Image (cartoon, rainbow, N blue to C red; front, side):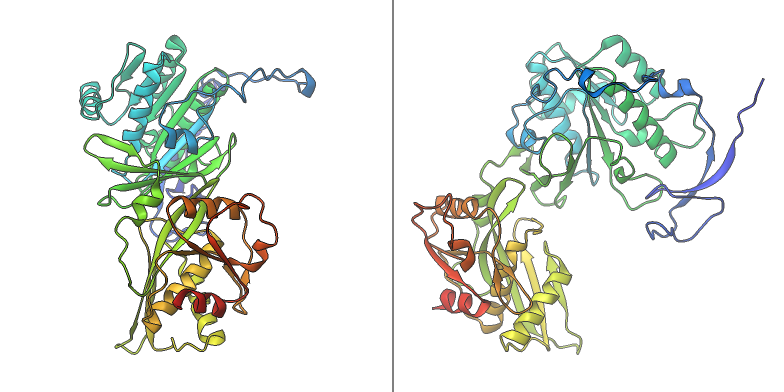
Length: 460
């Protein structure tokens, strides 16, 4: 009778790196005080839930695919279906991450209620709330359900596997993966070992059945709870909730998707009745825009396949502490410093003794390089105290020589601006060579080759 050897390891609760001794700073992710002592016990083969994979390679032409790529479960929540790539793929595993209180459980509960009304068999595993609390929350959200929705309060992985084997649900939600534990692993729930093993077992079970699995994971900087970044390589799709807890708007962003495009964005508004879709985010982000104010410009950006307009605000003031500051909310601070250097060197604007502040309205994070021109013009307008044209939008990538470079998906940006009533559009001159997709636009298109031309057009 062989005994299972147990050894002590120190595991980083942020990235999962292991060390035979305690370290103050993780060499992998550079997190401080993230190493926790764990008992590592090898798990037998049956610990994987009895999942058996073929021992022999299978010929590619003999693998049945059916209509797996075409069959999807749609929730009816268009913003949620968008970020999933058009709906939920059978046998897929999706991770929904975000800070506590951001709305992860809310969107999951609204989605499963909508799916149950369509007749799909759904199991909602709540490890943090009782079944009565979950029902009260569903009633507060005004979500109608049907007899095909089942709710259970359980954290034991073996019991959850038994439920899944007997019930054979089509959609399963685990809320949250940090509280589920495997009895054969001596470490506490939420540790990297528990999260990895439980997620792997549930993923194998989903892949061998026609079951779609949703895992909800918290993102914290504390070492007691492992963040969902540990799971990103296991799952098929990773969705992240963004936004401030005290801000009503929530952004659901696709980070990874094996069944659709990445960088898709869904916009929601948190209300007393749950998350409400924002079908036209451009109007929301521009609703309270100030008139005839310097340091404000509208930029059409692209998130995945979706265009929308955002307002970029800038403020430039004289530094009084002898050390200048450059602060950016929703924009890369390093990119802001680079663009400010271009303004000072190429446009002869004195920014060396100025504090520069940049804000993207609505909590949006600009990662599209087409926002460069808007940021440059915002800072220049704030410095010169010259308001920019209110009925104009601008986009374009800015190089180190102050040249304006062409960007992609011009037609989508122009059509979105025209739909919201803008009259002028400042864009890279090279993008006007081919007018595919916007030949009949009524916008006054102004092509520019450098930043100085763009600034002259907008301030005239």
